[in-house]
Length: 535
Image (cartoon, rainbow, N blue to C red; front, side, top):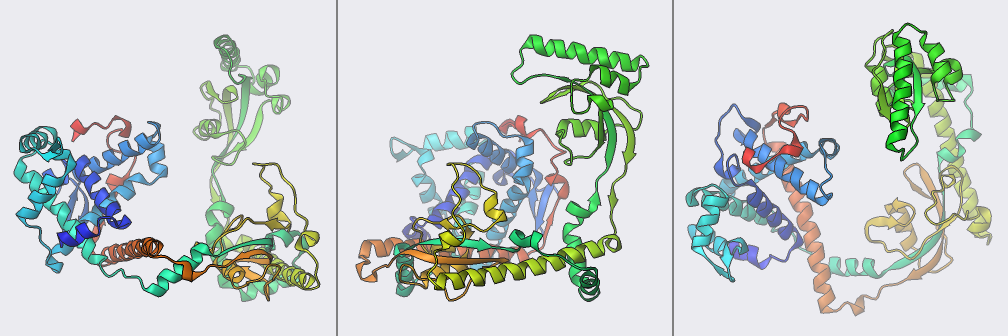
């Protein structure tokens, strides 16, 4: 089996899998690693069919991933970044997958002999000196660098080799036919460029309405659809977040302010705070001293402030939400300057019940349905005009924009867009993205100037296009070297698909229990301070 792995060493998937194994191996050895684990039930991160992934396994792997991510981003990687990247969940998932793969060895009858372990270690560059395996160097590195005995090290190395054999067995069925190679070659060498226009309901939302009778009828006959939409929009649309009505005194600090300017601003806000704490009315002090011209006249009234729903930024929102009515905040600084807040009225979070918004949702759905019908009708009318010889650019003129300028109007009104030459692989179309139906319709045509028989529906959008240019592939020019490259690529893709499907199947059949406490970012050591000596 190892010979099979060697013969497939150039496979991109095999390289990726073994690269991951090697990285895990290099970064994980030492106290607390899977090669030096103490299987104490008190310190577990996951249970996989009864086998433990220990807390120290997880901590070491997470620490390694955190350092790798930090290195990739020039050392600028924080706990918040890790939370956004879901780094703990992904780390534990990887460890669970490794355990699942290792557990398949017995079922498949896979073993790794002592000779295979010795051969793999001898060929590993990290244990060589001057291009040759050096046992003394190997022994020193393992015992001093990894802090392990030779026996324990080789047991863990054997386990990683077993995983590699199991993976190779799982993806061994990835084969590619000659017809698939030819089809892939053709897809690589076919090309087209189009002029296109999109028409979707959003563009026509203001041109339709919904009468009371229509809304009432829809609400009666589409209860399930309304309830589903309510659930989808519950958090974003129908939940009124907790908020605090506050007033603010603001002393501005200009961007790139000097130390003297910032010191002067701090003195001003401290004076205002002292007046308020001395008994003066907050609103009157705000009128006299605040430098926020938008709220100065109203005594610094900011209205109700909720997290993520105000124009004032996260810092001020956090300060406002933590106050109680009547309380003053400490002086704080954000991007606009120094502030002090006074809380006046608390508004608790409230979820609007379905019955209160049922008619509003029904009206939205009726309008959406009508707008979709209008979009389809406009697409059919546009195609009919093309059949008479009109140019798409004359029907919906191209809007010129400066390089790098974002044109939001392209999403609110139909306008013609032209593409450069693109290929059918992946169904990707420049300016649109993944659009497999539209791509198939484009490459079904063969002559420049051709138009589709009907508008192409992709999701809730209709596309009308005219073929600008068309390049045809010639399979007879497929030479042996390129044929091999195409075949290798396709095999790599199939291996990846097989591997993903196989591991997903293992996870579905397995009994996996994760320790949720381990996945919290509010417990454990600070990630930025991780040190290999901690484990």
